[in-house]
Image (cartoon, rainbow, N blue to C red; front, side, top):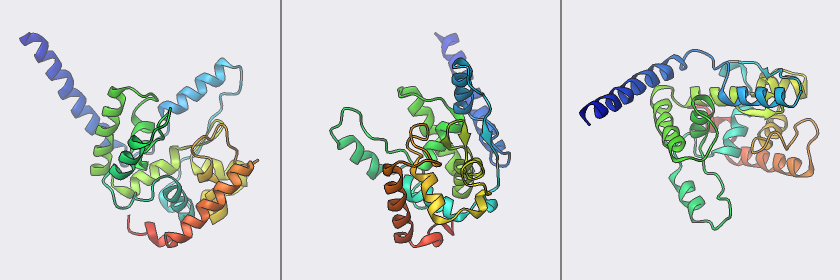
Length: 227
């Protein structure tokens, strides 16, 4: 038993050290690939489709703040204020009686999952998601978290990040996105495979208008000016 616990202790210790180093490195190094990107390439290959990924990393300074505001408005309006978790939303989601509970993940939690982990609903993955969420909140800070989210979020088929979406569907860089264009990108985030930026359904159009109204209600870009 002593040997067993010694081995477990070493594994945990090494994991903690390596994970902190990993997070520190990604505070300054662009995230070029995520587990989901690799999954999408594998799925495309299995189906005999093109495996080309559309993903262009750009700095936060070169992304329209309308895009940043749009994802905050649609995905996590308390993002500037919380420490990685929106406990009120979590409680509301848990109290709802649905066959499949709605998600209550913050942008920070989504980044932790997308960058460091795999998709799934196991308790182990959720625990690791919480761990990495705390780490990036402490080490990265809000602006870096939002920068990474805007660069790795799936925005269409084989498309990741707002720069790739802006170039593919609007023919312009992300820094030139208008409020309406940014809101439409945010509108498809719940399911970018089903919903289209280029050919929006009536649902996406309605959600786009709703997000644009929320952006105005939050006070515009000044809402995220002090991240």
